[in-house]
Amino acid sequence: MSLQVYGIPNCGTCKKAFTWLQNNSIDYEFINTKETPPTREMIQNWVKSLGFAPMRNTSGQSYRALGEEKKTWTDEQWIDAFAEDAMLLKRPLFVKDGTAMLVGFKAEAVLRGKLGL
Image 1 (cartoon, rainbow, N blue to C red):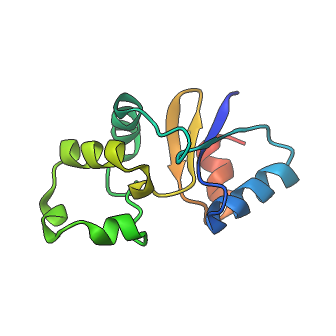
Image 2 (tube, rainbow, N blue to C red):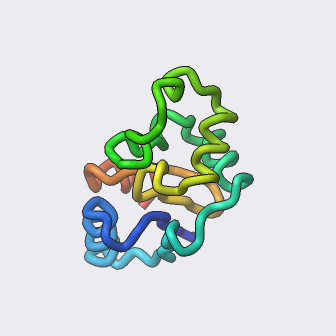
């Protein structure tokens, strides 16, 4: 199994996920989206798996800086926005064997179920 976790190192939710993964001896590769932003193609595939709504980081400054027109954006417009500013992506984003499986970290049961751990 190849598990990649996309996010930023100073994100509190990412830190909780990293701690949980480490405490459960689950190997993963961390990808810092500030240093290595995902490509448009990657984001497009993630949106196909998860939909654009769950992937939006609605609590971030980048999201709040968007105008009211964001409420009527299409999937393609969201993909463009995510590709332009990775801070719009909710964190952490879990990708297993190349497929986006889960975004965010709330409960270990969800993580276990979604990732088949």
